[in-house]
Structures are given as C-alpha cells and as structure tokens.
Image (tube, rainbow, N blue to C red):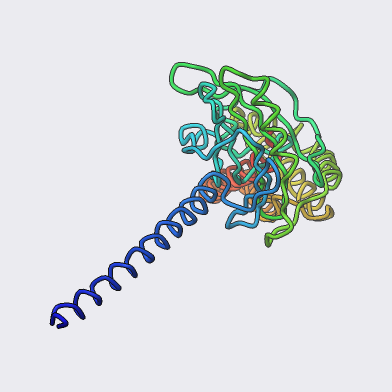
Amino acid sequence: MTSSHEPKQAKGTVEWGNLAVWATLFTLLAIWIGAAVGGCQVGEGKHSGSTVTVRTARGIDFSLPGGLARTNEPGWLLAGLGIEGLRAYAPSGGLGEASVVVGVSQGRGPALLSPIARMHWRESSSPEAEELGQYTAVRVSGTVAGGRQQHSVVIYSVPTRTLTVNVLCLLGFANGPFAESCTRLAVTLDLSDGHDQAIDFSELMTYSGELHQALSPYLAQAPGLRRQLVSTRHAGEQASIARRLAKLCAGAARSVADLSFDPIALSEQRILRSGLDEDAGAYHALATAAADGDEHGWALARRLTYAGDVAVGEALGKILAP
C-alpha cells in the first residue's frame, strides 16, 4: 500500500534537487560576476595583454601598464596644482607615496600650469616639448610643498581648445621604476573620443612668441609710466604721461587684434583686447582732465584707469604667465 506521504516525499526530493542545481548555478554566477567586477575595479576598461584600456567620462582614454592599481587621489596635491583628477593609480607593491594621476586643468603659459599651480610650484626644469604617442606635450618637473616636505613631481600636459589634459607623476621615494610606468601611461593618451581637440604644439608656441612680440612695447614701458604718474604732482607732466599711456594701450590693443586667436586662452585674449581699449580711453580722459585742471574729471578717470589696469593685468597673467 502506498503511503499518502510518498507523493509529498517525492515532491520534496525533486524540490531539493532543483535547489541544489540552482545553488550550483548561483555559485558559478557569483564567481563570474566577482571576476568581472574585480577586473573593472583594477582596470576599469578592456584588457589587452598586460595593459588595460581605461576610458573616462571626458573622453580621455589611456592604457594602464601592469603593476598599477586604482588608488585615492592625492587631494592636497591636486588642489595645490589646480588639477581636476579623473583617475589615480599607485604601484601594486606600494612605493611610498608614489602615484600617477590623469586629470584636466586650465593650464596657461609656456609650462601649461594653472594660475593656482604657479603659487605652489617650484620648477626644477624648463618646459620641454616631448612626444607622447600621437600628441606633443609639455613636460615640466619640479617640487610641490605638502606638509613639511617638498614632493618631486613630473607633469605631462597636452593642450586642447578648452582645457589642458595632465598626466601627473608623484614620484615618492622610488623614482626610477615608477617614473617609467608613469611615462608608459602618458604615451598612450587618446583624446579622439572626446568633444575637444588637441592643439598642435607648434601652433601654441608660434602664438606665444607673436603675443610677446606684439605686447613688448607695452610691457616694457607701461609699468614705469604708471609709477611716474603716481609720483608727479605737476598737471602738465600728468597730462603728458597719461597721453603716452593712452597711446601705448591703444597700440597694444591693435596689436592683439591683429593676432590669430589664442588656441588656449581665447576668452582671456578678448578680455585683454577689451581691457586695453578701455584703458586707452580712460588714460585719454585722464590727460584731458589734467590739462584742463578738472579735479572731478581727474578723480573719475583715475578710478577708470585703476579698474582697466587690474583687468589688463589679470588677463596678461593668465596668458603670459611662465
């Protein structure tokens, strides 16, 4: 006689059998997912031999050499250099503080450093052009203060139309092997997937030279004339100096207008030209007020020249800074 419990027993046996199969499948799936996630954490991209292709949200791609692992960004360093970090890596074996950071900044001047970086940067080598795969970069090395120490840093910078792409190497205590890994990463930079366009290095250098030449009379004479204007109390001398400054500013504005647009600091170039034009008008008004003995007109024009000088100085600082 068949027990009334047998069907339930058989049913229970089948259910446990299915659970065993599902448990096996889930275990295998978990192993597969773990491997996939682990791969993404280390390389965040597609593996190719001993390197991993890393893709960033800004369309800046590069290949990660073996022996480097994702790490926290050295925030104190990036803040001091004005760099927005996108990815940071360190040697898997741990070589002190050594790390490499890929990021972007508003680099200006021959060294392609941001304005804030020039406040903390102590240069140990002049900017040099260096071929990085399909791009020409500016390479600078120096030290940055962090805490009570000076930290050795090498920066590779590739200029684009709107920003500068940086590969920053914080060398730490083991310069040799890690510096090679950092350079190997830098030469694989690929900006082709982004919305920006790298600038030809010769175009950048040509513009820099033309701008310095165009502004050389203004840069050489304007500071001294401003000092003379402050020191003299004779109305005739004030008028004469103000006319010379007006002529210098107007000439500099025309020279800047005749240049091709700055491939990097296009907005700063427009501000510079506008500021020079306004400064020329203000100094012309100052000369007129001095000649006419118009104290009210003098005071008003003097405020305008102060504002114009500040605007021009800030624009020049961004474009011509070392």
